[in-house]
Length: 140
Image (cartoon, rainbow, N blue to C red):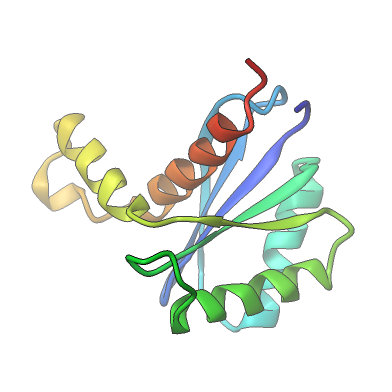
C-alpha cells in the first residue's frame, strides 16, 4: 500500500485525526476537530484528506463486545457516508474497539502527567485506529 491514509476517531465532542507516512506504514497524530454537525465534520475531514493527498480514509467504528453494530456504530456509519458524499477518496470503516483505552495506557507508559493525559487523547486514539489498520494491511 503506497500513499497517505487518514485515520478518524469520531467522538461526541471531538474528532481525532491521524495521518500515515507516504508509504502507509506509520501513523502519526494530525489534529483534533471540534464536532459541529455530521455534514460540517464530513466536509472538514474530506478537506484534510485533499490537503494531505490521502488515498483512503479509515473511520473508527465502535463495535460492541460481541462484534455487533450498536447505536454509536450506526452514527459512525452515517458520518462515513457523509464523508464519502464529499470526496472521491474511498472511506472505510475499521473496528476501533479499545482504541481510547490503548491510547490512555500509552500516555501512562510515556509518563505523561495525570493532569495532561486528557488532552490530545482523541488524536492518539485516531493513531491507534490507523496503526491497527496499517498493520493489518501491511505487505509481509
